[in-house]
Amino acid sequence: MMPDAVEREFDVVVIGAGAVGENVADRVVQGGLTAVLVEAELVGGECSYWACMPSKALLRPGTALHGAQTTPGAKEAVTRTLDAAAVLKRRDYMTANWQDDGQVSWVKEAGIELVRGHAWLTAAKSVEVAGLDGTSHRLRARQAVVLATGSMPNTPPIEGLQDLQVWGTREATSAKEVPERLAVLGGGVAGTELAQAFARLGSDVTLVARSGLLRNFPEEAARLVAAGLRADGVELRLNTATERISENDDGTFGLALSDGSTVTANKVLVSTGRHPALEGLGLESLGFEPDKDGHLVLATDATGLVVGTPGDEPWLYAVGDAAGNNLYTHQGKYEARATGDAIAARAKGELKGAPAEWSRYAQTANRHAVPGVVFTDPELASVGRTLEKAREEGYNASSVELPIQVAGSSLHSENYEGWAQLVVDEDRKVLLGATFAGPDVAELLHAATIAVVGEVPLDRLWHAVPSYPTISEVWLRLLEKYGL
Image 1 (cartoon, rainbow, N blue to C red):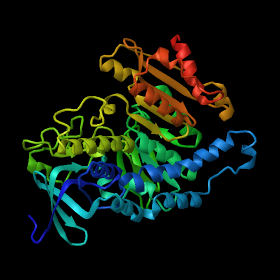
Image 2: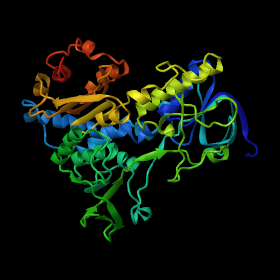
Image 3: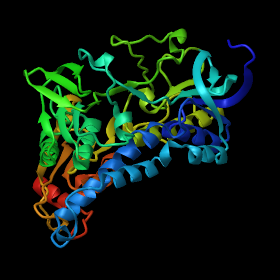
């Protein structure tokens, strides 16, 4: 224990004041409990300052410009290139210039305490904090401690990488200038989005991926995104490993690839996945051990309660990226709401044991209906299970897919290219999943999410008539092709 620590007691201690931690604290306070947030960086977390918001601020101007350029009457009135300085200025505005005053004000107004510092667990319901101002804190939770510490980037085993100053996603989304040449390592969501963003801002971009592009999505959908990247000048080196990185005499970087070729870049962005940020939290002292990769991984139940929590009562929870279930901000906030409500209900004796599926205390959607959007141009939006995943899980599943060719897409832009797929549970005749690829398809996704969550029978879904002329008419075409 730290000497001369300020001792305080709350119903709930939340470690991590990102969007997920904020939502947990807000829900427990709404439930009549007291809560404190502990944060070592900016209140609002990764999404607000280095991920969702700045990356989309970098992407949106290029998408808007391209949309105008593909619409007769508009394309004659616009320039061919983005104003990079103006894009970066708007990005700065969307991140509040990396100042968290507004978020701190919200925390105070919500009735939540805030302690700035590094926290770790010392015993059941006990948290020590080394305050950023030099003050030590000893926090005791009457009901629960919640880990909402987010995630950390993976470091791939590439020779020379450890010795070099390269970009992670944080450095890319907060960049003050656009590099002449950018090498992106990783073909996942973040790497793909940022490759296109910087290409449209003027960089000569090469994306190198050990496997395919967006390999967790249907191949046809990923193929459309790849075509969009190539149209913006991004060179794709897929199914190719980066074996070595070195710094040249002129300050540029040299990449040696597994196919024998090389890439030279002014900046290198490493975007090869993330893992839960659980190191330094004292979990080892409570009996939790790292996995084979040296990372701590926690299993959680439907309420976010950590499996194997020491003691005779539930008190340790993990939500969002820290839980490692779905690395999406919106899904983490969903988990936070369910967890916060469960903690409050257990404190009042209203919840004992496991909650019912689809109740306000259960994170049931994590297993059935996780939505996600890749904000490239064209966009890729999906929810639920792919056909392959559904069959792996034992469902009698079929799929129906087709190009998006409806009146709404023709009006949207010249030469609109899109693709859509529905995955059907043939035993119950309900949707298990859906994928859309094409310009502005993200706005189609929530309808699919509702259909999957609500297990809407297809013969009832047939009566949900899409407005004409919109891209949503693809729903009608998909159901017709299915046979309705």
